[in-house]
Length: 280
Image (tube, rainbow, N blue to C red; front, top):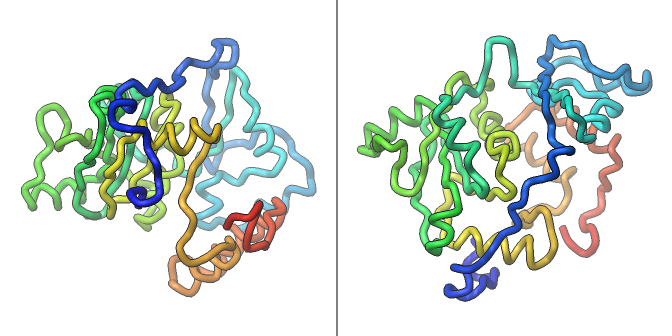
């Protein structure tokens, strides 16, 4: 809920907000992209001390593609050839979207996105946008075929232009996970992959309605504070390790699966402190 705490620019100023959308220098662009599936040969020999991470398969380390620490460090470097571990990628495909939708998403410079898989929630139309946002921002809702059928039964029809209201509906096929929470993490955590030319993106939970101007939100949370990421504080917990216990307690994952993640966080040196620089 941003309505009570976020001070946006006045409406007349929002119409003239200019986001820095300049492209990176062509010398820094990736020219060749190579995916590694679970059966792929990992690039980089890596240090033998990192072999501990290649443990039994779980749905979590499948998603990251069994990276060693050394391989992960290399993946952050921008080179003409980028090698990407992608747990939901396979020779048979996965998370399939149409070429038409891909083309639309590649045109987006600023993206607001949400998703509903497995039937999901109703689609709430965004409100409170400036005319500038309506022209500059893509609003994309990712659905699977189950959600599409459920929404059509309720009378929500996709128009010939691919939209329902302000949302461009992108139908995803061949979702990689049985657990819809995991499928939902793909558009939530990988907008930079789905919108390759977007410099800014905002995620909207499917249970929420977006009620503020997205250009104003970006200006207030990122540009004004010279930040690259903004995320709300958790309402109940302040520690990722406490969150792990809650995940197990609520049966959202098995203790063994959670231990895989927590072991990685400890290896990375993520502190158990409740607060960091005064914040959760």
